[in-house]
Image (cartoon, rainbow, N blue to C red; front, side):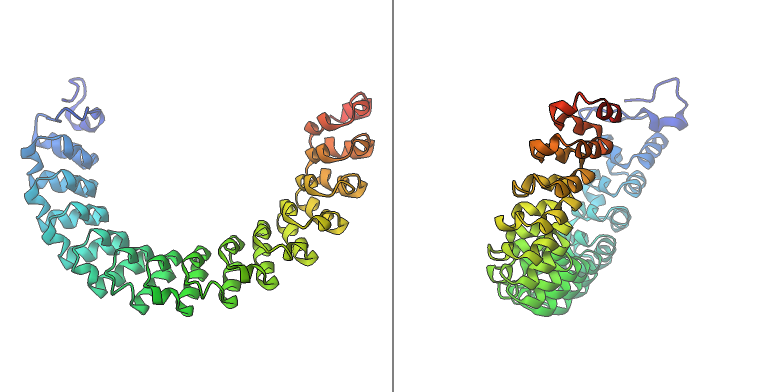
Length: 360
């Protein structure tokens, strides 16, 4: 495609809408330079001789390192071109010639910018401790691409999990059973708990460290820990719905139930049946989330105090009140003042009441 004749040559980049089956063939070298300086990936559409023109290729990769994919083979082996490409986009290393993926200067430039570029590094340098250390300090998950012996290097793994806790997934088995390593990982990211060795997933100190950060990890705890009240309390204080993973006996513990519903009223749905009939527990739940009225025992759905607290938090909780309370003018007024949508759940006689209608 050529530049439309009514546009001055210097404004060439505005023309670009190129079909993949057509080559971009502007009239001059200057035009190519202008185009790739603005859109490096346009290099894929120029003719082969231009993809071998070092000056034009340098312009392209400086704008977008991934343009290296479309350069002539000999330029992918050109150190200056590849350095320019990885300086702009580390993952451009993928398209470099093999000898440059084994070049320490090129590799260091790439992994310093993005540790995940380690995946494109020559095998011998993925076993180079200095290279891998730079990579995991920049992006802990680069540990995935390190040589096996370095995944068993304690210092290196500690650096990785300090940057990204879930890098623990690629640590050697013995390090996933190392308490210090695992604690560092879960302090950074509680999801790393899933990758700890089984014996540490039964360790109370590790579990407490995890739950104090993210109660959702309670799901991955062993049954032994899910039966431990201290661990369960730490979990539900951070994530009330963690209560669903507690053993049955703990779901009947009033202290635990109150802590869970204070964090998330909907956790009432996982509380033992006898505690759903406990007014103190029910009040804590509906004060947090009016919708939790749906899970309180039927006798408390008829309790005026509980229902009033529920509709003050969420007016449409009126839906779960007994017929008698949906005909209680004070309760209905509280609900519709909060949100007029609750009017639909009022008893029929109140939907014809002038005061209620005016409030709505």
